[in-house]
Image 1 (cartoon, rainbow, N blue to C red):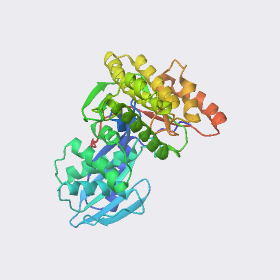
Image 2 (image 1 turned 135 degrees about the horizontal axis):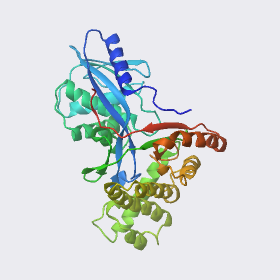
Image 3 (image 1 turned 135 degrees about the vertical axis):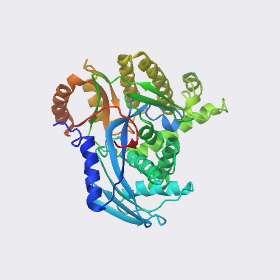
Image 4 (image 1 turned 45 degrees about the vertical axis):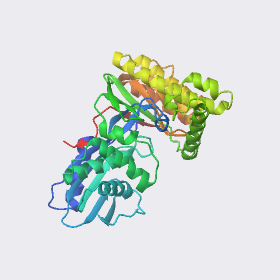
Length: 394
């Protein structure tokens, strides 16, 4: 069965509004929509000061907020049917965990010197949890945007991105990069964002979705190795940089390393570190070439780079798994699939596929039983379109 979002944005927005009215009578709230994201190219390049190519998608968090006359916080999760109550100037991590994403943002806004009063909040969404579409970043960006509007703070988008990332780093305790929040806040319909993770400069590139859909095939494998192996990959990349630095002292990250430098100074010393670094250097080059493909409207060439990225992630960076490799192998010779690769940290999660819209049903019907038979797991499918970033809901 195709697992697409059951709630259309309008009905989801109205459900959030209805819940708000039922819990907090007599108030007309402000409603914000904040999307999840996908990343087309540029995996494991962010912490190496490289490039990423994300886009906001049509799966989002909807949040209704209204001011209170006291300093209390009343937060309601529609999907979990849970309520958190607290005080605006006494923020502590909650055993419920989900309030921490909102409380961390409140803390960071206050740290910038902006006074906040109490408020009521209801939120719900259709971003699949655990599928690598960054529901946490969407929730943080929704909170930052909603509070900036509600209390007339006038925060610009980049400030909201940075404080949302810091909220996750400091209050939630997850050392995420900036890509997820950036894509959620800066997304533009039918465009991808080339973000330079070193300077935070960004450029929009057209992504023609006419007749094409983003199809995420969820392996149903949890990222059990992702955090420990993520740290190991960071250390290996840093080790490669140090080997190059001995000869080029000005270089501080793989962003400025060339393949010839790796071949001269890393390959003779440590073959494993060389392979890790080679993937990152090649992926940055691939992404830059991929944006040229998009400018030319050459989706076929772009799709081939996605397949090449998967090969690099699987063989050189070694963050794939049997299930993800199987899913990419199943589509690589399908003329209706333009490109595919694993997406996210690795060791589970989804593959991202560019598929001709007319062929999606047939593809899902073909792959679902063979995946079940080969991997003894059920396949989940999500269909996405590229949408605008965080904004007031219409």
